[in-house]
Length: 305
Image (cartoon, rainbow, N blue to C red):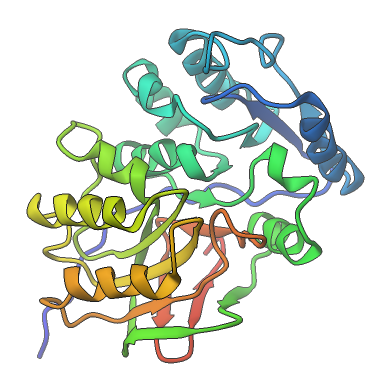
């Protein structure tokens, strides 16, 4: 009889309802105002109230304000009882810099939906790691407005529905077959790799790892995965999900690298999921147990359970 794995107890935030207030934060780079407003319009059309902090549009070089200022936006948004969900304005760069200034005890006491992707992966991973908070890998405000209807529908379903939800790859690619159930973790490969060796690096053991990226040459993808492998990050991994790798060279080259890095692991590995920087960016929760069916390109999970 196999050993039963004991997963960490997570804080699942309350689902969104029509009329709820969504707070916007800018933890990373500055952003285009019009593109941002297009995203806010999608939220308001759906019946949500949107609140924006006074300094959201600050600029400090390639950052949306100082590190402490951006961290304070997050701390204040989690502390505000009227805000039911927190959506990031944009990714880019800068989330790593605010990690030392976040009030993790405060955040733990006020669990709520937190959503973003790309550079926001640093926050998704750390809030799960340090606060046991289920977070959501999905569009930011500046990508939501121009997103296809499928991406917008998946966004609202993930944040509002209590049903069993399923994400199916439109072009499933099975790199190693199998079915496994475990908590999902991960996001942007570059950002995750830069957490390695810090006190903020999440433990990937007994998790299904999600990876995606954009604009990274195949040799850099190889280097990042090799570093994480050498650091022992993948030693106790349960499964692997590959989202989009936009402008990263031929997809087959990425899959060849992955096969080489993970050849020592007999775990289900599925590619071709429309998660990340591609035309579609389907929203998935991080920290909840999902079933990965690598052969059929399926991710299934019970939402807000």
